[in-house]
Image 1: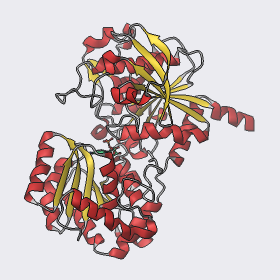
Image 2 (image 1 turned 30 degrees about the vertical axis):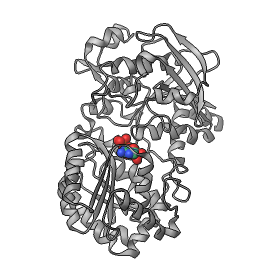
Image 3 (image 1 turned 180 degrees about the vertical axis):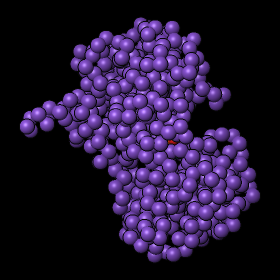
Image 4 (image 1 turned 120 degrees about the vertical axis):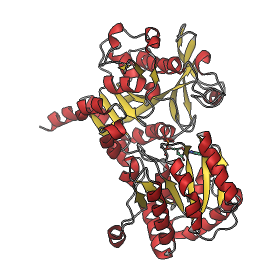
Length: 489
Ligand code: ADP
């Protein structure tokens, strides 16, 4: 059994703001049949500590964890082996894990997530008598200091992996925090945590980890270029041999249209006509005036990364093609306002729910005809995978994991019977509009549309292959693959 400690700021179903949580929540289950035991270290946000229900076992205590006392609590919650940092001075705050009530980052986020990386490093350095991880995997900037704490701490055999779910979020702070990070002066260097005169937790992890992974092969290539690397392309090119992209899978038990309790009507690839019941339920929920014609859904953060400004530009045109929209999300106020205005301009045609609603997102995948994902960059993207699995045709920009997972319905792919969706050039409202137009046209050919739906539903979006790749990587890092080769000689 390989012991891996996964260090993250979110894990579904305990705490989720985005795809990161889906991945960290699903990986342990996907890896356990492959001889990998994965525990997850999480901050003790109230929504998570509440789930302990008075259970959990205190396995370590800290008198001073970045300016306050803390406990480390071990528990099994929702099938996940969790180590929870119970540190009220850092995490006992309601709501979003990163933002205060004013919608801005908590000013002490640097401290809150330094503590996460630091506690992980203590576990790596033998904090517990009965638990020793062999590999520690840090997810995104919040866990990004962990590899530096390992690199600048006592010598150890423990290997570190930095997994980048989004290179845009760098965890960048001013250099004045450095004296409080519990790192030696040598760490404030290009080969350590320093980044353009300040400190980037993500860069630090990418610099100091033994291996860097990201969440799709295409994104792993893209971030080696200035357009997508956002200042880290040089670092990545310098260590290209130890960078790889492993595609995210999805939890196919949670996302199973045959048993999904969030659907008004369950269905399978053979009973696609039943999706109409869900479409009607959506029409009611989003106050649409009917279910004729194609219904596009969007389930997204409303941000520029997700291309939501492009979508706002084309809504009128696409409604003009006879389509309807149901939009779920929240984010930048001007985009929320833009979509509210579009809904007001097109009553019965454009419906908007501002907020985060996991259950509704299932109903949308199970009832809408197509899901639009017009991202400018997309490390992997999960909503297009849910779309494939639910027969909700993905209409996606050709970037990152979107390009890796969807086969465009061009004439050759249609002839060959392999198309699963529609792709278009990113960062272009015109290309998005044209893609929507193609979707509307294809929708008009029920036979072709149904075939695409069925094909998508058959595509393998599970964790199986990717979990194999993670397990192989862990084995390689521990020298196990080499030993096996030797044994075979
Ligand atoms: P990102 O992590 O960049 O936001 P992903 O596509 O990787 O994008 O993952 C987004 C996840 O969050 C998916 O599981 C998606 O269904 C979910 N999601 C996004 N916005 C909402 C929302 N408003 N309500 C419910 N689920 C949402």
